[in-house]
Length: 530
Image (cartoon, rainbow, N blue to C red; front, top):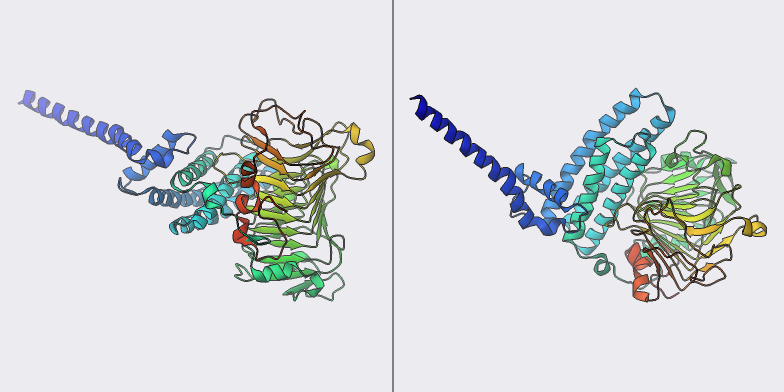
């Protein structure tokens, strides 16, 4: 009977339409109800929940899975997506002829490789379900987002869907982690001692010694009296993924070379004969075709990196614009008693946890920049004479998401003019910093600010950009440039009067120094009391 058949067909269609509505409309609503807390820290909670729904619809997780289990599965899928993106990026790189873009894509490939390892390590850390594990995961996932943004910034085309998707997933991962773990203030514990605890007792003894008194694993000497004549050769010969400290001693001399400490070179220490005795110098720069990321004279992304008693220079000069002397992206890195000398973009504190002590950083525009969780203690930050019509910017912090555990903290330091700037200091404005990215975060505390600092203190990046979302703070500074009465009136600027507000930017809290620095031997102050 055609009428009966039609009614049956109509019923079947209606049934499946109803089933479709249940699965695709009601199910996500159920996800929203059951897992709304998982996405409470996300800037776009609906997008976050859609990722959870996707995991459930593919039966990767169930409605009874807890937040940490869902996050782990999300990260596993994230790793697969990055691994899938690598050959795509490599293919694009091989198809283009633009040398600068080829360089940018080379940077992207390295950053993707690093990110795969960081997310994989984060999965293991989260599985420990401990405060320290969650703090590590937050640091590493913060670095992953920074890696993706660094890649995007270097490309001439900004609408790459693959990269946009990876950036979105990094943001969601950080938001999920923030939603299911204890807040940083509870995770970070003030510790007693003289350095972050991620530094071993043996490392501490090494950092209390001079290079010639350390029993090194390898010696670099230009005159042939060592094992190698260049630092690059010695680094290449160092063991991969070493579990113990490997020391390279670089004898006095000027070494003209560019050196990369890759992620496989873990627990590497490079020590010289003194701040002005051992010098590593290069001149790669943006104007001559090198990416900012690749222009560093010394780049170190191996975990547990230590640099001591060595001067790092980029001599390209102010007319060459971005020219990095030192780039650091290795987690739990320590820079001790090192001059870092260039003009624009001198020190690229790119990502991860870093500590600088008794060092000297000089430059002009954005001469300390990047998105690490970094603390400077008892350092001299020295503004040089810039080119005509330029302004000096001590910092340009690049935090792009409120869930990133990153920021720049300057404590017990001197911010002063160089000898060439001092006579003409009134001709050039110098600011403590400007917001490179939307959630830029920098605090200057308990430091000496010379008269070179403009009364406004801080400068805009571009109009109103980031002025409401940044966090810039000053706490208990002194010197002729420390007055705050004429400082900027931005919503994100703070004159800190409560020690509790300053504490999150100390060694103990910003970089969890109590858990790693004490083993290095570098002197440090973990809290607010010197």
